[in-house]
Length: 391
Image 1: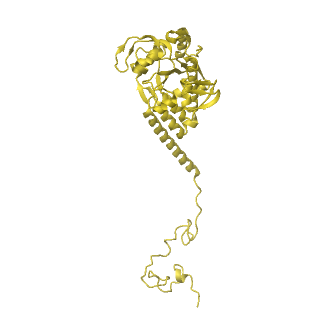
Image 2: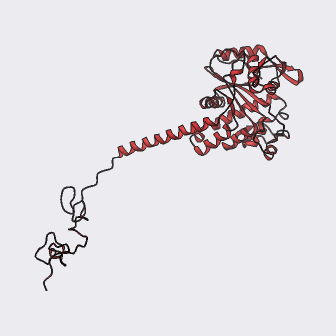
Image 3: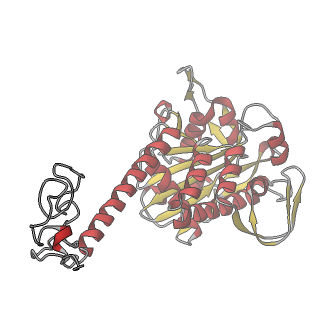
């Protein structure tokens, strides 16, 4: 029997004299009129496949694949990255801005000094136990006193002459001037000479600002306050703060228990360190420790490893913003500027000092050296280099 020719069964190019195909056309063998659903191969014969036509029209030829357009891919990837970063940044900004507790209205402060060069912040650490459980109060050695008092006060000025950080001892003997009540709006007469932290106890943040401005002549642009719990949470959120402890410290009142040397303090340990007063021997020694720690905290917080890492940035911001109380005009950029200014002090680009002291005063308080204070304020307001030395 002769071998069948290829065209006798597959059609298209063979002999069409064979029996009628499945679809009634010659070359496929089968009863006329039967449709198998197949055609002459055109369903499978796309460009580049056997039986189809390549880019040049040749049957069974597949043309070369075009080279990737890497320039276009890089541009698309870069634009996509920028869009993602923009959306993330905008979202983070509005999220953080909504969490700021703008509770202090500086517009109610009366008889304010004229504004000088730069920006001045009043940073206050209060002994507020707000949000702390009984167990947390015990762990942090905060006690359970009701209300809140100022535990530390720092003037931070960022101006043409650089950054100046000035601690105000809470036992400073000053004049509490006449003031407008923060809630009643009524004017109250001067309370005379008293400790600086007494002004906060009388009428809160606005009277404290009024008292500092009255006794220094320096205008406060922004106010920031944080309580015990918020302070400890921020330290824990950044993974602790490295400090060089100058000596062995043990104080049952604050809970401080440290050996001399460099070490990383967690939230509870950091709070004990900055609150240590009895072992330190004086409020002036304590304020120096507070300055060192705040500068170190700012130095470790304002770093790319924190700012660019959402797993560290969000917990840190959340811990701080939930308990941070600021004035009504303070925004996130102002807050960031404050932290960067504190960071400069750590970097050696600023001046860190206590308010100049002239001696002791009633009730175990401290009297300011007003001649030095006047010179210091004039240098700050005029944007001059600070030459005054503090204690």
